[in-house]
Image (cartoon, rainbow, N blue to C red; front, top):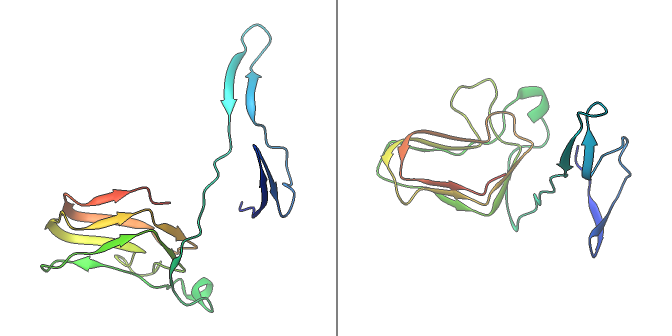
Length: 140
């Protein structure tokens, strides 16, 4: 589920709508009496906002399964995409039409997908086929 943070104060955050279920945090003892183990339980909070937005068609992606796709394939070029939000992407019914895709570039040290947020995709978020020495790092 996605919850929008409305306020941060010290170590406390407030979300727009309360969670429907109890969500444990901190350290918990789990197990049968005498055989309990101590676990740290923590939520993952991810910032999906970016100042650069690359977006597909919002109107019919749910019915068609076809959003935008990006690909750097074969040829001598390269793709360097950093800290962008890519949404409504991927084409579920079409093999190879992924949100972010490096395809058969062999050695490509200038190819970079870094810090991107792939949101509301219909297919695989990031795919690398037959490409080496590329940087794919810190994407969500």
